[in-house]
Structures are given as structure tokens and as C-alpha cells.
Length: 252
Length: 77
Image 1 (tube, rainbow over the protein chains, first blue to last red):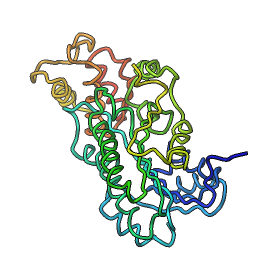
Image 2: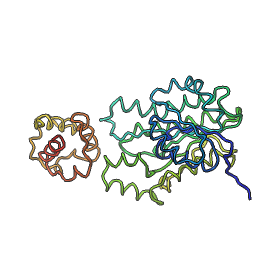
Image 3: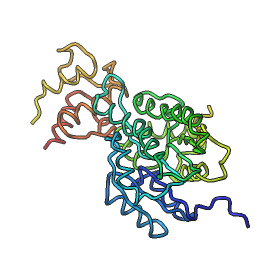
Image 4: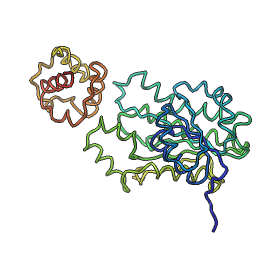
């Protein structure tokens, strides 16, 4: 029987590995045989993710993506622990729900930095000599909010939309280097990010959003499955694209 | 204890009403700008100024400006 998705012997770095889509991606990668470099800020939550993974060779590293300009140095310093990477997945992200007139610069800056700017430096660091394998794949987690609009999340939308454009430019720039880069654009996923949103939007509003998803709210595994596809050789002729994983939300 | 005048002034700012428009007895449903977007701003303002979090369900139970102030006081005590 042919196994089209086999990550045995592969090393993948995942940011946002402590929760939600990142955590689920790490766990799925481990079930498929990959060794994962888990990156986030919270050590205990990273340990918890690792404890739920198959295999024991996975590496935990801390990094605060609010300071992304240190990433090149961080990759070099931790090279022996990181190893040679076959893939990079940027799942780390924060949401910021606020109408424009109430937006505070501190939260705007953090949203753009963690969601978008850090992706640029992550990829730059990943492409340094000796860090990545000759053929590799980068997956950035964008959002349907990077494609369509909703009130009160303009900074988040700007950051997620930025990832989509970043992907297109870099796909062309890096094709000859045998680096593929793609986005996934999830709809509303039941995760810690949604739990945080529930504190500021009402049950009625949440139900209304759910009704806009023909297949209902998603689960982190729904998105992790798509990330794995884009990391795998099954997508070897795919680059610069955004795979929408949204239960039909953006269809109408 | 929270100063009623201060909260009313902050609420007037969030709702972009002239200072002195509100006195406390006003029903929220009758205030034109009391909508979902400004409610988000109110929740953020309360968090920033009083370090308390109010969720939409708690807000829905408030019918008047005075009840909003009572809710803030209750959360602070």
C-alpha cells in the first residue's frame, strides 16, 4: 500500500506550538513520523504539547515573536538543536477585536508583529545556510479574515492578508531555490483563540457566525490536515497559493 | 467605589456624546450609539481603566446607564 504522506526522517519547525492549530499540527506530524521543533513562549504549555506527541526526539525552544529581528541569531545559536529542517509552519498568531476608533497602538503593533512581521524573519532565518534541507516547504497560517472582511478586526485582517501577499512574492523569489511557500486560510476554528473571543462577543453573535459556516465551526485538526498536505510531497507542484479551509464560509 | 461622574464621562467619550448628555437614568436601548461596535469599545475602556472584564452576557442584563455603573462597582468589590 502506498503511503503518500510520510514524514519519517523529516524535521519540521512549528511556531505557536503551545495551543490550537499549532499544537494539533505538532501532534499530527508526530503521528506521521516527523521530528518536530516546537516553538512558542510558554514553556509549560510546550511541554504539555510534547507530552501528547508520539516519539521522544522532539525539541522545545522558546522564542518571543514580539522581537522577531533576533530570529536570524536565534536560528544560528540553536542550530544544533534545530537540525536540518524540511519544513516551517507559522501558526503563532494573536487576534485583536476592536473597532478602529478604539484601537490602541500597543495592540496594533503586537498584532502586526507577531502575525506578519515575524513570518518574514522566520523565513529569512530558516533559509540561512545549513538550517534547511535542499527541498523544503513553508506554510503560513493566514485566515479567511485575510480574504474577506468583518467589522472590528481590521488590524488582524491586515496582518493575515499580508501573509497571503508575502507568500506570493516569496513563492516566485524562492522557487529556484526549491523552497515552496503556501498559506492556509482557516475559518472559525474551535480553539483557545475562539475561547478568548467568547469573552467579548455574545452567544448570539457567535451563533450568527457559526451559521455563516455551512459545515459549522472547524476543529484545529481540520486545519492541521491541510498544513500537512502542503508540507508533504503530495503538494510538490503547489506554491504561492492559499488553501481555504473554512467549512464553506467564504463561498457566499 | 467608583465615581459615577467619571464613568458617565468615559461612557460619553466612547459613545461620542457631548459631555453632560447622560445623567444615569437613561435606558441603553434608547441611546442611539449603544451598538455592538461601541460595546466592544466600552468593554475595552472598562478593562483599561478599572482592570475588570465584563462579558457581553453581563452587559445584556443592564438596562440603564446606572445599571452599567452598578455592574462596574460590583466587579470592583
